[in-house]
Length: 152
Image 1 (cartoon, rainbow, N blue to C red):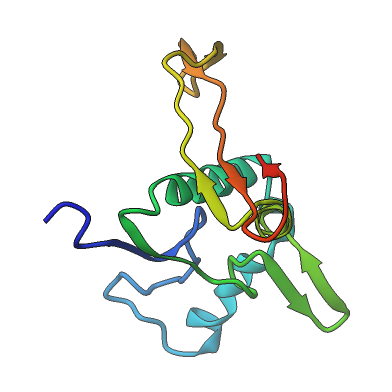
Image 2 (cartoon, rainbow, N blue to C red):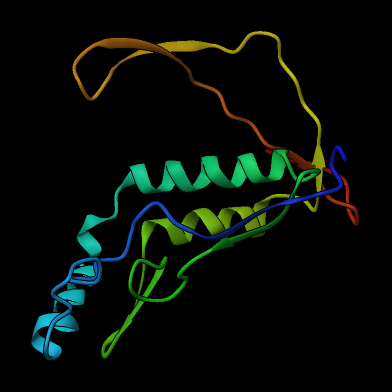
Protein backbone atom coordinates (compact mmCIF):
# COMPACT_ATOMS: atom_id res chain seq x y z
CA UNK A 1 0.00 0.00 0.00
CA UNK A 2 3.11 2.24 -0.10
CA UNK A 3 2.16 5.72 -1.36
CA UNK A 4 -1.38 4.62 -2.29
CA UNK A 5 -2.98 6.41 0.65
CA UNK A 6 -2.04 10.08 0.88
CA UNK A 7 -1.62 12.18 4.01
CA UNK A 8 -3.90 15.22 4.39
CA UNK A 9 -3.23 18.19 6.64
CA UNK A 10 -6.43 20.11 7.19
CA UNK A 11 -6.34 23.60 8.71
CA UNK A 12 -2.75 23.71 9.97
CA UNK A 13 -1.29 26.88 11.43
CA UNK A 14 1.37 27.66 14.03
CA UNK A 15 -1.06 29.76 16.06
CA UNK A 16 -4.20 28.43 17.64
CA UNK A 17 -7.31 30.54 17.73
CA UNK A 18 -8.33 32.27 20.94
CA UNK A 19 -11.84 31.02 21.78
CA UNK A 20 -12.68 31.87 25.37
CA UNK A 21 -14.85 29.35 27.26
CA UNK A 22 -15.21 26.97 24.31
CA UNK A 23 -13.61 24.01 26.07
CA UNK A 24 -15.14 24.59 29.47
CA UNK A 25 -18.48 23.99 31.08
CA UNK A 26 -19.02 27.77 31.19
CA UNK A 27 -19.85 28.55 27.58
CA UNK A 28 -20.59 32.24 28.05
CA UNK A 29 -23.95 33.91 28.20
CA UNK A 30 -23.59 36.84 25.86
CA UNK A 31 -21.26 38.48 23.32
CA UNK A 32 -19.11 39.99 26.11
CA UNK A 33 -18.35 36.52 27.52
CA UNK A 34 -17.89 34.60 24.30
CA UNK A 35 -17.34 36.72 21.17
CA UNK A 36 -15.51 39.87 22.35
CA UNK A 37 -12.50 37.99 23.82
CA UNK A 38 -11.78 36.64 20.32
CA UNK A 39 -10.43 40.10 19.47
CA UNK A 40 -7.17 38.86 21.01
CA UNK A 41 -6.73 37.04 17.67
CA UNK A 42 -6.31 40.43 15.99
CA UNK A 43 -3.06 41.49 17.68
CA UNK A 44 -0.69 41.79 14.70
CA UNK A 45 2.30 42.52 16.95
CA UNK A 46 2.35 38.83 18.02
CA UNK A 47 3.70 37.65 14.66
CA UNK A 48 7.46 37.16 14.58
CA UNK A 49 10.18 35.57 12.47
CA UNK A 50 9.50 32.34 14.39
CA UNK A 51 6.09 32.15 12.69
CA UNK A 52 7.76 32.59 9.32
CA UNK A 53 10.41 29.95 9.89
CA UNK A 54 7.81 27.45 11.11
CA UNK A 55 5.60 28.17 8.08
CA UNK A 56 8.49 27.89 5.60
CA UNK A 57 9.72 24.66 7.21
CA UNK A 58 6.25 23.16 7.16
CA UNK A 59 5.70 24.10 3.50
CA UNK A 60 9.13 22.73 2.56
CA UNK A 61 8.41 19.47 4.36
CA UNK A 62 5.07 19.14 2.56
CA UNK A 63 6.70 19.82 -0.82
CA UNK A 64 9.60 17.44 -0.18
CA UNK A 65 7.08 14.74 0.69
CA UNK A 66 4.57 15.51 -2.04
CA UNK A 67 4.65 11.87 -3.12
CA UNK A 68 2.79 10.98 0.09
CA UNK A 69 1.05 14.30 0.95
CA UNK A 70 -2.10 14.77 -1.07
CA UNK A 71 -3.55 17.85 0.63
CA UNK A 72 -2.10 20.63 2.78
CA UNK A 73 -4.56 23.33 3.90
CA UNK A 74 -3.37 26.38 5.82
CA UNK A 75 -6.16 28.01 7.80
CA UNK A 76 -7.28 30.61 8.18
CA UNK A 77 -5.95 32.82 5.40
CA UNK A 78 -7.95 35.91 6.38
CA UNK A 79 -8.33 37.42 9.86
CA UNK A 80 -8.29 35.55 13.18
CA UNK A 81 -4.85 33.87 12.93
CA UNK A 82 -4.50 34.22 9.16
CA UNK A 83 -1.64 35.68 7.18
CA UNK A 84 -3.85 38.56 5.99
CA UNK A 85 -5.74 40.71 8.47
CA UNK A 86 -8.45 43.07 7.24
CA UNK A 87 -9.94 45.98 9.14
CA UNK A 88 -11.84 49.20 8.41
CA UNK A 89 -8.71 51.10 7.35
CA UNK A 90 -7.24 48.45 5.04
CA UNK A 91 -5.26 45.24 5.35
CA UNK A 92 -2.17 44.03 7.18
CA UNK A 93 0.04 41.50 5.45
CA UNK A 94 1.34 39.57 8.44
CA UNK A 95 4.83 38.11 8.33
CA UNK A 96 3.56 34.66 7.32
CA UNK A 97 1.97 36.17 4.21
CA UNK A 98 5.42 36.86 2.80
CA UNK A 99 6.43 33.21 3.17
CA UNK A 100 3.51 32.18 0.96
CA UNK A 101 4.36 35.00 -1.45
CA UNK A 102 7.91 33.68 -1.82
CA UNK A 103 6.68 30.12 -2.39
CA UNK A 104 4.15 31.17 -5.02
CA UNK A 105 6.31 33.65 -6.91
CA UNK A 106 9.87 32.31 -6.62
CA UNK A 107 9.65 28.52 -6.60
CA UNK A 108 9.13 26.37 -9.68
CA UNK A 109 6.31 23.94 -10.28
CA UNK A 110 8.47 20.79 -10.22
CA UNK A 111 10.31 19.55 -7.14
CA UNK A 112 13.90 18.37 -7.58
CA UNK A 113 14.96 15.53 -5.32
CA UNK A 114 18.07 16.61 -3.40
CA UNK A 115 20.07 14.73 -0.81
CA UNK A 116 23.08 15.41 1.36
CA UNK A 117 24.84 12.95 3.63
CA UNK A 118 26.04 15.67 5.99
CA UNK A 119 24.36 18.94 6.78
CA UNK A 120 26.17 21.81 8.45
CA UNK A 121 25.25 22.27 12.11
CA UNK A 122 25.29 25.08 14.59
CA UNK A 123 25.01 25.33 18.36
CA UNK A 124 22.08 27.23 19.84
CA UNK A 125 20.66 27.72 23.28
CA UNK A 126 17.52 25.68 23.86
CA UNK A 127 14.56 27.50 25.41
CA UNK A 128 15.32 25.64 28.66
CA UNK A 129 18.91 26.94 28.68
CA UNK A 130 20.94 23.96 27.50
CA UNK A 131 23.18 24.27 24.45
CA UNK A 132 22.12 21.97 21.59
CA UNK A 133 23.49 21.30 18.12
CA UNK A 134 21.03 21.56 15.23
CA UNK A 135 21.19 21.24 11.46
CA UNK A 136 21.12 24.71 9.93
CA UNK A 137 20.24 24.05 6.32
CA UNK A 138 16.80 23.30 4.92
CA UNK A 139 16.59 23.40 1.14
CA UNK A 140 13.71 22.88 -1.23
CA UNK A 141 14.92 22.79 -4.83
CA UNK A 142 12.47 23.33 -7.69
CA UNK A 143 12.52 23.96 -11.42
CA UNK A 144 10.01 25.38 -13.87
CA UNK A 145 8.32 23.29 -16.54
CA UNK A 146 7.97 26.29 -18.88
CA UNK A 147 11.35 28.08 -18.54
CA UNK A 148 14.95 27.38 -17.57
CA UNK A 149 16.27 27.84 -14.06
CA UNK A 150 16.15 26.50 -10.56
CA UNK A 151 14.39 28.00 -7.54
CA UNK A 152 15.69 27.38 -4.03
